Length: 288
Image 1 (tube, rainbow, N blue to C red):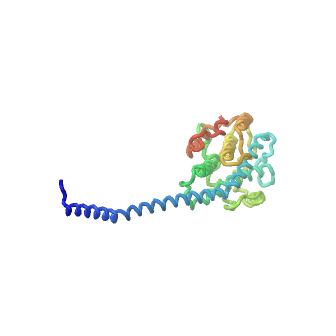
Image 2 (cartoon, rainbow, N blue to C red):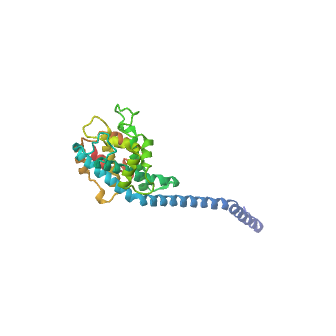
Image 3 (spheres, rainbow, N blue to C red):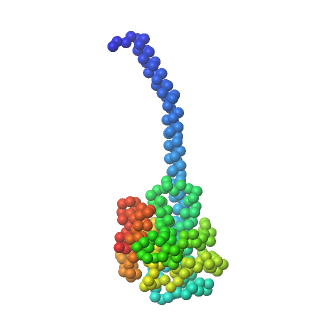
């Protein structure tokens, strides 16, 4: 088909007009979409940065309290028959070993709470994988002490908190201490003397706990110890880490980890059984 000059000019004008109209009509939508994408990206990056900074701010306290509790549990396993922690319900008098054991226990969970409480104003879902995992450890640690799913397969009576803790009273005890600072031993003793009823369940848990009793509380403590090893191995410094041969030696000395299978199931809730979804957790493998 042949076009004369006027037709060519008309076609060019129509094409130019269509292009201009398209630009005018769609450019605002494109720019709006790009702006929204930029805002979302900047928000996610900002939230991830704030979460990382918040965790970093409290990480040293977390690692220190985790190491302190881990070391005390090792000592408790090794000296279990000495009876240093046996006070037969007399929790008001000062008995250093059980007092300092409960102090280290509460200090660890308080360090977790320091991180968790201040995250309610942030969006941790945009965090890095490493930061998300440490937040999952925080949730898992409480499950290890409070969730009766750890006793699945046993005939444990879940209506009585004999070998676990009820979640709300447990939180209330931890909340007795200042939210934004670590706990001193003096502060702990003062709180214990001021409100002994708030600490009774934790003292009862550790009072006369032993490796040969026909109960499950020591098995729960063994799992807590395994969690501490995993946390310190993953986020601690070289001097915090426990090697696989030491875990195997510990397993033999304490009669194994009878709740390991249910512990692995608890970890599955938070996708924590593999490091970064690829490498199996060393301490779990060594404990089998």
